Image 1: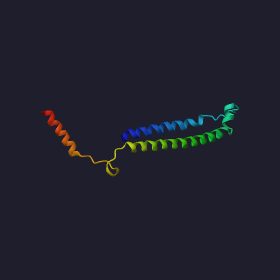
Image 2: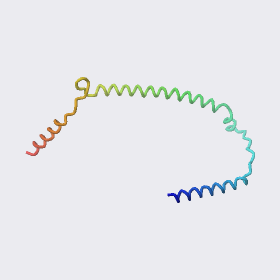
Image 3: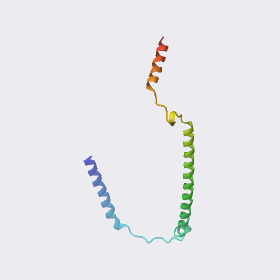
Image 4: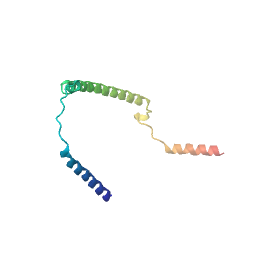
Length: 113
């Protein structure tokens, strides 16, 4: 693993060295003057305004969606409470494993005769 890591680092440093050496050969060209519609639109205040409006809409929409999800959750919780079996004092009756084992033994002995 150490050899692999070392070879990887050496190769990356060689590639970086070659890129740095080639950098002075690249001549800087003056940026083209873009007076197109898209260039003017991106440098205007319109994108910021659109972003502000979209953020406001998303904020309100997500808050309303959160309230709706919480209402659905509360409704489902109430339904589950109605459906849940209740024993004495609102607690579920304990599971009787002896009774379950007795029923299984009784059914096996009846079936075997």
